[in-house]
Image (cartoon, each protein chain N blue to C red):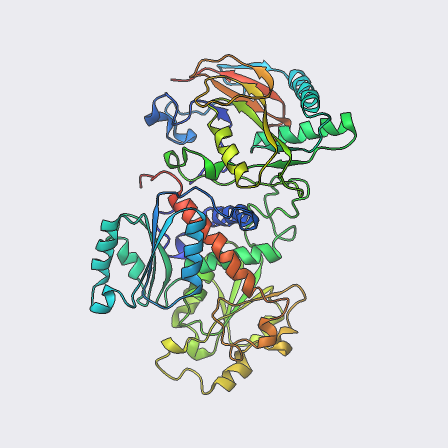
Length: 219
Length: 329
């Protein structure tokens, strides 16, 4: 059966330079058995709830600066955790400017380049604000920027929804190791990592608390 | 997902809900400026139709094309089948052409199951004889959940975005009362619906003249009744089946007029239904036989919605069967 939610651990995908034979398997059957859980040995907090809050506040200000007061912007979160981050950014922009920013979600599953390397995945919700994206400045929001392949898929998915005036990218964590010429416009934290390490973003809305964790690859 | 989709009974509750949830997301593609997704690019879907069909064949074709698959239509009329080629030889021909999935409709019950032995691609049953028509049952379940799902039905809540309306994802059809009326004996739609709807938690009642009720109906996961009026009063959904004259080899009822009087749905009978209830029909309809024109054209009728939902549900099935990695089974 397919995983109902995308695996929140950002580790080398099946297309990464890791051992594809092992990594192509679903997370539940990964050798070594027990999946990583909070509190397990080997996970280190790299962002506290306060730091996440401050980073999002700063990004919201930066978005307003770069887009001249948030004129004609649309925030599109990439499921699952990008959607919650986009909503938090939209709420802050609403606080600062008085008018809430339109917010939606963009599922990129059908546009991924690694679909055939994993079992078919459940789709997440795509929801575009009623005014659409034509002529708007779209800010894509995701939790972790890694290979850049998710963003590549997001750009393709966006292409089918309309023609934005510009597309920008906001991420909570940039962990490096890009495999495509993609960069973020707004970064919460630049996190130097080894390729085999894992980054895990936990958000209060679904995980009960805010934190960003760094774990060692268990190979 | 299973490797093939032959019977609605092969689907677990989780499988069925996954298909409905996937279809829910894919429904939005129909409203976009570009109604196409790149997901199945480079894959070939063969529509192998040994029986006449407009709705199902075009629906599968539209679904495959919206997912960017290449579609080859193969109908028995005007092909080598008319020259006497066997199903096996046709299958081997398709296999040699590299079909990733074969959508088959066949007058013989069990033909799709046989086909799975001869082709390496996935097989989707699009109706075999009087046996099953699983994608029709899926689109019927999808339509029921769309029209009647929501807070009333039990569900897992989910993550509704602001302004998203009701989030039906993760929900089955628990407690829904569905009455299927008419030629149950010859109906693959009824068979697939009974299996799928009971898996999803609905209570299904079959209503038919005694001559058109299958003998072993007591082994099916549903109730059977001969009294339409009594059942209509306690139904959330009434599904009218087509009287399949082409499959009737004997006299099952005296006259069409008598059938209509006892088992046809007209405006008077529709008034017996609870206020929220919907009227479904898998098509093609015999207006004036099992369903009156005024009922078919009423607000309660979901017949047009069923056709639209057919495309999205079949997209979901094709995506889940072909979109991912070949799993070792």
